[in-house]
Length: 171
Ligand code: MG
Image 1 (tube, rainbow, N blue to C red):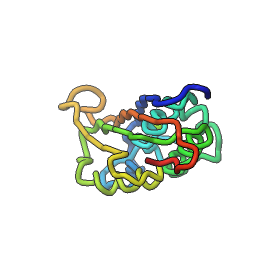
Image 2 (image 1 turned 120 degrees about the vertical axis):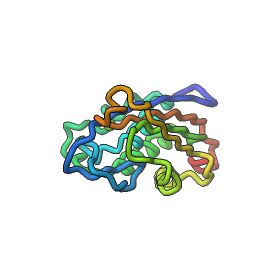
Image 3 (image 1 turned 180 degrees about the vertical axis):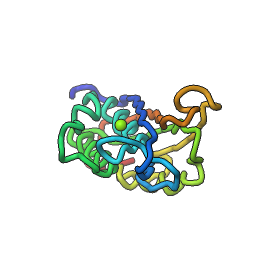
Image 4 (image 1 turned 90 degrees about the vertical axis):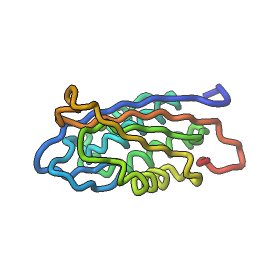
């Protein structure tokens, strides 16, 4: 990649809430009566973050790099996918400036877990500064598929910059 400077990316994901699955969000288990369905651990937040980072780097999306048709990714922790995504960024000469994300869920409440989730995300991104990741949450006030509790969505944006030659990848 020949362009220098800053690049941005966005990510969006949605997974259905189903019975008999544990709920994993941001790499942690959150107590709830349902969990998200999916091939991996269905961590919708981490998937949105991966897509934002891959988009910023011009590398497509999570489905290209970690296809759900590949048995290697069945049940995998999505934090591992985030680590692999960050390794791809590093290999392409970029480092993360910051990631901002929002979880869209009617229930359960996400913000009580904000600090724990942020710690996991920052660790996976190997980001030293806590400002490198920000997490928000909202409901849709009972409207639509999210409001009816049929699933949980997440959106993320990422800003990355070309890595200086003699410094680490994380900001
Ligand atoms: Mg997904």
